[in-house]
Length: 327
Ligand SMILES: Nc1ncnc2c1ncn2[C@@H]1O[C@H](COP(=O)(O)OP(=O)(O)OP(=O)(O)O)[C@@H](O)[C@H]1O
Image 1 (spheres, rainbow, N blue to C red):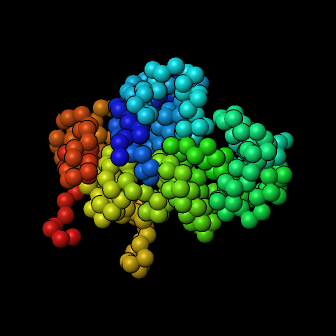
Image 2: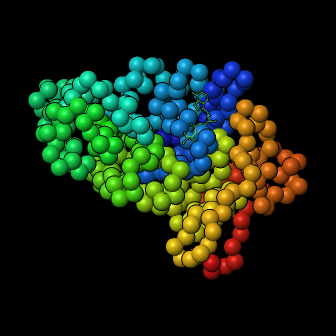
């Protein structure tokens, strides 16, 4: 299957009163049709900025300052605005964490949902209404008809999140960008919503670019993972190698900090130090001050690009973690 999305050397910046925030710094990856690719990293790593840039929805003080975003063979950064507007909501859509605030408080769920279909298709209101009810059912809403006539303020956080997912998926997009979609709901609900989303994307043949800081969500959903740190993509690999043999010292440290069921009594290790200031970012590896494996070369040279260490396993590191054979 070919690439649906290709991001090449992407740079995103935000203007702030005291300078420029370098939020995304030369990110490159490709995502296949129907693939679930997870971008994981700590808060402030640039994950949302990346998602917003792909959608063409950066706020006024933000801009893409370099690179390419190729969707279905077309570079969206040089394509006409109308072409990108037409794609948005139809071939690619975005859903993010704060579902309640994204819904219009004075319109019923039904009218907001059907509006999406009417805007992007030839269906009339009645036909659009039944498509929406079916979508809500697929997302586990027990009484879709009642939900359609409800107002957002009457819904729980979990119900709002399902409505937002329905809105994003109702046109069966080829790419869904899902940014921290389950962080505001409890763990049981999170697992159920993710399961529904997985089924729905499989049925709709949609690829998902899933943005999260939660390794549990990654383990549940991803086929392939990209780890972001300070605006850089520092490692990409299939799901299992990321968890079993992470090669970038940052990924390794991140996994070390997780509590494990099979290591009773093990204390949660905090990563030492703090992420770098994205306003005064130097050209050296951004993880250098916190890295347990730093070499003198890391101080002398600019941050390395991604190296392919094994098939489909890439890391941006001069001294990656190694593992004895068989482990
Ligand atoms: N509108 C904005 N104006 C100024 N700076 C911004 C803006 N949006 C994001 N940033 C900054 O850009 C950097 C990357 O932020 P981003 O939201 O993309 O990170 P993230 O990895 O998605 O983290 P989180 O999960 O906390 O949102 C951060 O330093 C953030 O403060």
